[in-house]
Image (cartoon, rainbow, N blue to C red; front, side, top):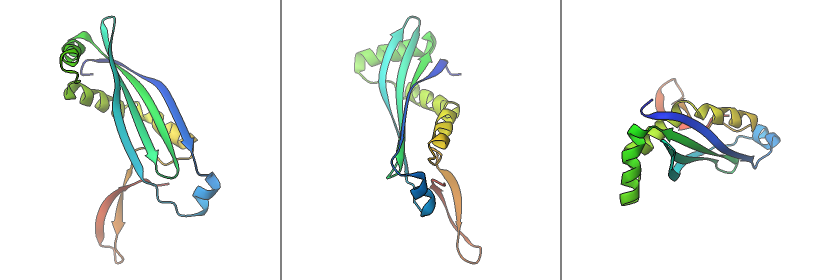
Length: 145
């Protein structure tokens, strides 16, 4: 998988600030803000480990924070690690590869956590908004409860 040997969910934190009763008793608009950052890049024997933190903020409702370790093999990690040591920047290609891998499989962990915490899914669902009369006006990405 593009030089990736392993993706490990290292830490997860979640909190809901609004009661389930409040969520169900009124119409709550949920804005889902998804951000990620690289926390560390290190060598671990023959492997290279990129630590990525994903923060999903449900404004006014709650949050989920997940920290992943992405293990790269020598072929992909060695050149990126030496570039990082020389310039202080992690190559964008390596970061994009790690994020693509995280969002394609382990994000299911976050879906399960959001379900347990009674939060909307961390990835906004596409919803078609129709005008009265059946004309489609737009497609929007919104959190749906």
